[in-house]
Amino acid sequence: MKDMLVIPEKVLARFNEVLQQRAVQESFHFYYRRWLRYFLDFCEKYPPPETKSEQVRLFIEKLKSKRQTPQQCSQAAHAVSLFYESQKPAVCPPSVPSEEKSLPATCLPNPPPKAQVAKSAATVGIRLPDIPAITVVEPSPSMNPHGGKRYNEWRCLEKSKSQAWDQAIEILAAEIKVRHYSRKTLKTYADWGRKFQHYLADKPLEELTSLDVKEYLTHLAVKQRVASSTQNQAFNALLFLFRHVIKKDFGDQRDVPRAKKSKYIPVVLSRPEVDAIIRQTAYPFDIVISLLYGCGLRLFECLTLRVQNFNFEDGILTVHGKGDKDRTVPLPQLLIPKLKYQLAVVSELHEKDLAAGYAGVFLVDSLEKKYPSAAKDFIWQWFLPQKELTLIPGTKECRRYHLHESQVQHALKRAARMAKLTKRFKSHTFRHSFATHLLQANYDIRTIQTMLGHTDVRTMMIYTHYIPSKTAKEAKSPLDF
Image 1 (tube, rainbow, N blue to C red):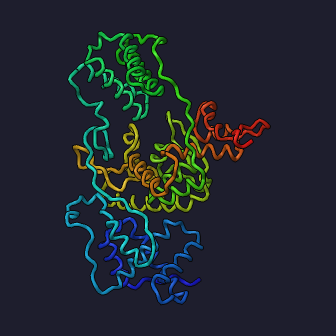
Image 2: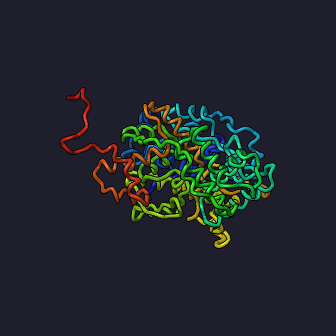
């Protein structure tokens, strides 16, 4: 077999300069050089057309015939466009502002502005995906390691005017942590504790009675007109507060007015609608949506995936779900090439982080104390990492976090606007669509229940609304008679 063409040193040096000038993320340099080598080898094997755009078109067609993903083809096209740019006699101006020199060595450089990327891509007629901006995050000491919020979402744990209530919230947080409940549960219960405190105007804890709870729950249902699920959430939070913090009788609360429970029918997307959203979503959020729909994951389950959760040999994904319960789901075969590409990106980024001396990824509970090297081990790296490192307050440590939920929600909102869908959906809609489509394909309902991680089969009943009846009394509109 003939060896692949070696890139001449001068050509490679100039290409590397353009990669730096255009601020292509360093973790992708290896792949850009590989695409250039493939392109030069392609041009040597096949007589190239006169126009550059035709050369690139044929090269991309060849990649598609080799089953390369659309993301890989876009990256290859961008690499070739930068190669053509490197052959120009004029020196390209740097696209990164001079202030970037002041960034810590542990943080990644910013990518090129969208306008600049589009300009270089236009020379070859390829539409490139949007590249999100990369910044250095310095979180506040409010337990928010990922930033991006215009307000402090953990303000429930901050000090108030009542020292007794502050101490009660601290005890509540400790009780929740001892039981290994999720951070969302901690935030939700602490939020309801603070709302209850505000409603009672800092009433002393020793004077609290079950009547206060009854009045507050009635206020939520009658005055605030909250949903039944919201009232139940408040009920559970206050029950936990009374039982484990204040140590008082909660009462049965049977005569509390209950918020009216609405009949909920989940929104379900069709397969063409799912595909349309994925096409309009930029990397890496297209991978997120593909996993949400392809594996039926909750959003937090998807974002907290680590390298060790993927078993490509057996085609199995291990998911760490609600209540610290693990389950396995099959990996979509159509998605495996893109997942392996993402794994290579994570590996390259991990090597860069190690060379920069980062402190590792965030780990749960006391895992790092038990396994001191785990934070830097490859198997514990996030499969969907943040583009920026997080600076730990009060230290000089930089750690890497996974993508934040708000980033996915923003990407979904943009994709919905671009796809012009008529349905209102969110990230959980893909999980609903996963279950509904399997039911429509006549898969056993208990098998789907296991794949979704539901403990009770009754939870699955909301999906049967979309399964048409096969009896002679199938529901019809009078207009169709």
